[in-house]
Amino acid sequence: MSRTPAPAPDGARADSPLAHGLKQRHLSMIALGGVIGAGLFVGSGAGIAAAGPSIVIAYAVSGLLVMLVMRMLGEMSAANPASGSFSVHAERALGPWAGFTAGWSFWVLLSVAVGLEGIGAAKIVSGWLPGTPEWAWVALFMLVFCVTNLAAVRNFGEFEFWFAALKVGAITLFLILGGLAILGMLPGTEAPGTANLTGDGGFLPNGAEGLVIGLLASIFAYGGLETVTIAAAESEHPVQGVAKAVRTAMWRIALFYIGSMAVIVTLVPWDDPDVANPDKGPYVTALSHLGIPGAGLVMQIVVLVALLSAMNANIYGASRMAYSLVARGQGPKAIGRVSGGVPRIAVLASSAFGFLCVLLSYWRPDDVFPWLLKMIGAVILVVWLFIAVSQLVLRRRTEREAPERLVVRMWLFPALTWVAIAGMLAVFVLMLRQPGTRDQLMATGAMTLVLAASGALLQRRRKAGAAGGTADGGAEREAAPAGAVKD
Image (cartoon, rainbow, N blue to C red):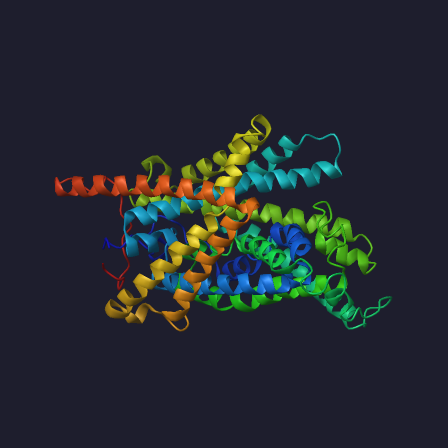
């Protein structure tokens, strides 16, 4: 196993070229709102249609896996804050090839997601303003968030703060209204009891197969939590910030995801056609069932905010990941240039790739664009696997060399780390068994293998160059802070 010099925790030093413009309130709200996305508000409907009331179990199981992943990532990020987050940790644990593979695959995922979210937001707005072209709205949104991220990191933080505040407020209000309705305390409603949980086929109407489909749908709804560990590197107090964010992630997942699923399937029959209708979704259906006026419009606004928030966060996350990779000699030098505390070329490159994906959705809707979607289908699981294996290696190394840096500790190490790895491998097997996800897994696997081979080749060339007396690929290494773990 390779033991490489520790890549720079770029956000942990005052002399880092990146700015430290994020405050604790920004980090807290980014962490709070990061778990609330369009995938929850609309995408969860497909999971409910497949699993029925047992979707609560599906979200609980996948939520438990996400909690373990975030705890592992939090442990490594608090010990070694870096804008490259898990890519830096993978390089330190397994070698440059692993950092290269995890980092660039995540960059592709975020950049493609920027385009997808832009398309979704444009559909909503063009529906409000018929006759306006969707591509023009996508271009406007891309321009706004590209400029926002080019200006200063605090602009990203402020946008996310208010976006997250609106999302948190909306889902909190939904949970309150739903809870009152379940108890029969909401005027004009009667307590539904367990009729929707046990009727229409029972708690598992489609059997274990339906539960598996719901589980796979729920796994990918949790994407986005990783951004807070990337953002922590540019905060005023990176170690304390990421530690606090990770420690509060547990109750947020339980409340927002599992809690809202429980409310929906208790209030609404799982086989209501509106639940899986992407134009409505489970939240609109539940609110309409309660007779809340204007529920559809309100939730459309919330979904629009969720999409715009995701665009903003993904441009930020992609640009910082690209910057970190280049600073470690794993990408074109030009992308890593920093001015005004912002890697502006990386911001432009990430935004441009996202807009290219939008254009491909118009130019090549039948071949290239679907292939891109399949390629990123299982990337988040690949990233989580890198996180788990890296934590397994780095925890022992840090305990031996700098135990004082273990501000956050993984529970019951190493048992729960192995449980998480087994869980991820089980999800891969389930994806192989399902026709709808098998192609995604194969496409993601192909991209991962290509990146791993490229990373290994780059690693070999850098070693050969170092042996020949050359500098480490000419790349600027990020300086490790005082007390950092030396490998």
